[in-house]
Length: 313
Image (cartoon, rainbow, N blue to C red; front, side, top):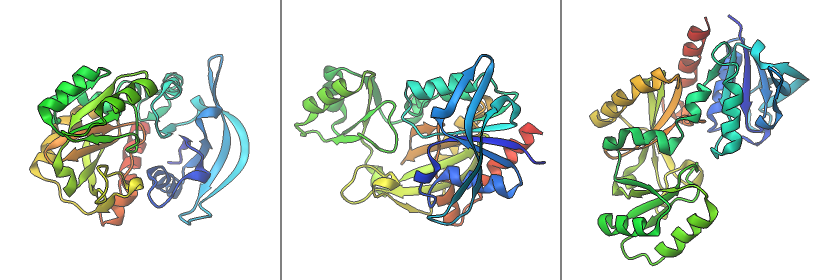
């Protein structure tokens, strides 16, 4: 069954195909004989009742430096497509939120992956708050006094933007770090919204697991070990990927989340687990597909397309 598929994503010439999950989805989509239309979020428009995108037909090849070919530039009505893959990276700002409102006008007749309504209502560091009993101690605040009291109680803490991504602006503050006041002042100045304060978990030195769920079921996992001079485990800041087996606690966390993800139409989700604790639920543009496969794991892109084809069919 050949499908008409549109990919809303960041500029394809800038991606690193070695670790890009969107590229893995593109390769699998092409291998199944589906038609691919590519456009970037700034070329999405609502004209009356029509959701219009300006873009190109796209062909892909797993070859660094020559990984894509664009052809047939044109304007399309996305309501005429079977699937739209919402794969632009955060930041999860008003531009991103507006995208979800626009795509919601064609979903579910055109299947948008992930469901744009629930992408909007489930940002990484907010949706996870529905599962506080699975998380390390956490506060959402803009208050210096709250942060001071939190550090007094938990000693070693992490401060990070509520709508950030990729480990950007994530800071660790130990019990005697004198930068707390100035760092909170910086966050108050730069970010209009509150920020997240969390108990630092030393288990991160053994790695931060990225577990991928497809339609609510465990599909694969990878461990990300931070560099010796880093508190962050994100791979683009030096974290090293390694094979990992899931613990009973990991499976318990996934069992709790799975039914809710499925109910919300969140087909492709990546969760982060440090030690015994859930820290994030990534629904906007999850990553990890290529790393899991590189370490002998499941072909997750294939699982995702199996689900999509079944839903469309």
